[in-house]
Image (cartoon, rainbow, N blue to C red; front, side, top):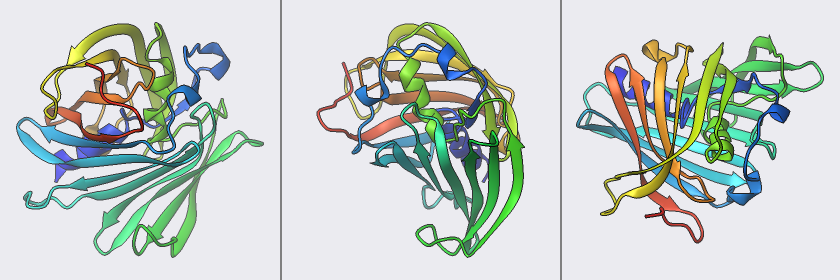
Length: 268
């Protein structure tokens, strides 16, 4: 079960990671407005793999104005694997989280954490959730912790997949405090504006992309930590196309296999 858990956690943590901004938003210089690429009807599906083994999918879709949800599911038939997770976030217009949650299937129940930002106290309340199924409200909810932050620009694991899209065409370094599974660390993004191409299995020709590299000292599920590379479409949409991540078992890959965004196709 370890390869799938590592892979799924890392994608939501890096295409992906789960941060609270360590650099005040005013110190960063995005080249585009969030409105230029955020779509209320964007629907993206990624396949995750380890070496030549295809492990599962991550389905990310917007569900309203700066709201998004992700469904993570392992493929049936894999030995000792049955991973199902739902991640939800509500963001402000700068892609900082107002609230969010992540729940995983655990036997017959679904369990996880919800993050709620308290602007007045510069803190995040972390609640432990218990659901009978992902569509029903929690039957049990209790405060697990309250973290006091240096900045109220909080970003959870799903919102951080949108934040790099603001800066992918720039040349700057972005440091963020990272909140992953209730623990804090630091993640650094190196935006260089490097343009290249990447192959994806569902297209005959390579996709034009912009590359970002980074690293994190956060230790996640089963030792998740270290360096990562992501590629975003080289256009105004800045759609995540592909990611390579390091885990205990080695390198894993996340690759776009389906998309539904009005008027958009991967640039070639």
